[in-house]
Length: 116
Image (cartoon, rainbow, N blue to C red; front, side, top):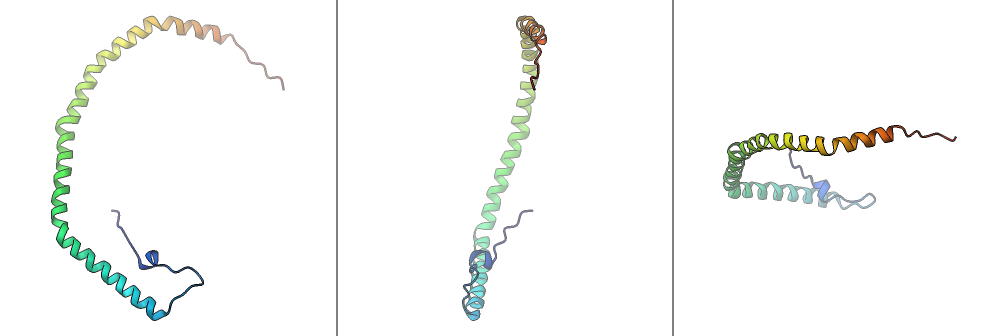
């Protein structure tokens, strides 16, 4: 499972050579984490259940469409195009087969000499 992890140092990291006072750094750290946790919990309580319901419906519709529409449609097309494939293979074999065979015989006689 992918977890989003945001740390104080990644967001408000000071570059090397520049340092604020330790008390400012500690207070900022406490405020950042407190606000992050409180805001996250508030938004989770406010939006978590409705969003979970929406995503549950979304994935249910996705599963339904794949099970009841896409999979049978692909099976139908594979059965239908099996005959098309056989027909095209026959036509190409009759029309292009002799030409390709002749070209193959002609080009098989070509040799490349290395002049190194």
